Length: 295
Image 1 (cartoon, rainbow, N blue to C red):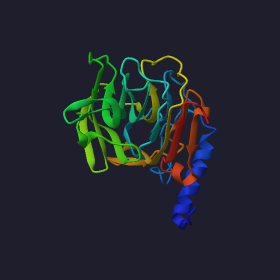
Image 2: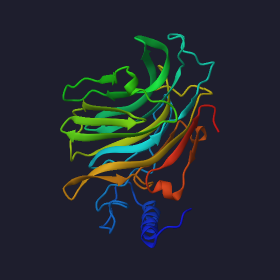
Image 3: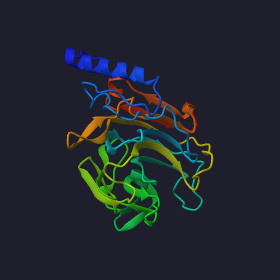
């Protein structure tokens, strides 16, 4: 580990001490005023749950915030290498598999769920849509809302400027920019996609949670036990993760350190190899490996 200046060392010690103390707190307990709330905890910041139940249907690594007055989430990530299981072809779509990698964000607010990020998709080449999935493309999904807003799913246009590939580095963010409106941005490798997305449940100042997810999704398997597979998505490195919050009249980025997120490895921990250091944890960093055949 590189030598730290005395100031950085003091900040690291403060965060680690607060995290250690937080292990004894209930999820909803709040903190007193601290000298460095951005890098530790804000006064009255709600702590995340120690654990959350898994939802069946896929293999996924999820980091999710507490339910608090967050305004969004963002980060910088290297997209994973992909190895498919050749025995799990999709009979309905020759050339495709029943396992599909994704790297995305989103959250839950006002009774509405969102999943927004990148998924392995078909592409358009020379005017023809490919049979196989060949690149990561942006997608935006929301569930329905009590306002009457219906569920929706959309992809970025099938254009080369919106294709990303394994091992490329991207920055990604989802932010509440107005009542009922989210802004999604993904940028990297000389490409950028930006879209405002209607989601009635999301409002500045409302209580909700935000997440980041690395997954092996499985076709037509939502709500069912994850199906056995030898598919792997590996070496996806999060260099940083941050949450957005209003502070002193401004929207600021705060590190999504280990004390601000609930660690979820679903359906079980043996399918994951997570590599990180204390220094990486302080800024929401880690390397994620997922193997449907286990480690």
